[in-house]
Length: 83
Image (cartoon, rainbow, N blue to C red; front, side, top):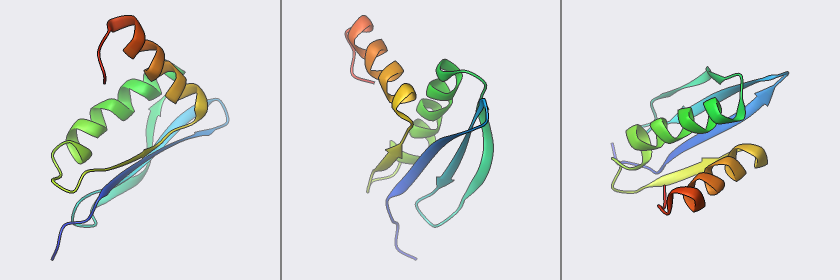
């Protein structure tokens, strides 16, 4: 089976964030609890990025709510690093 791009999707349901992940060989999961705050959801997404996207030669995509994406971008500016 050929590898495919991975994908990470974080979404908000009520006041909590959840995540769906598709891995390189079609594995992954749906509906995992990602946190109750924007920061928790962002950190969860970045951990999963390391597991599923960074380690996949074909890369992948992250689909994030605006507030989660904004938190990550703010941290990149504050730390001077590209996450």
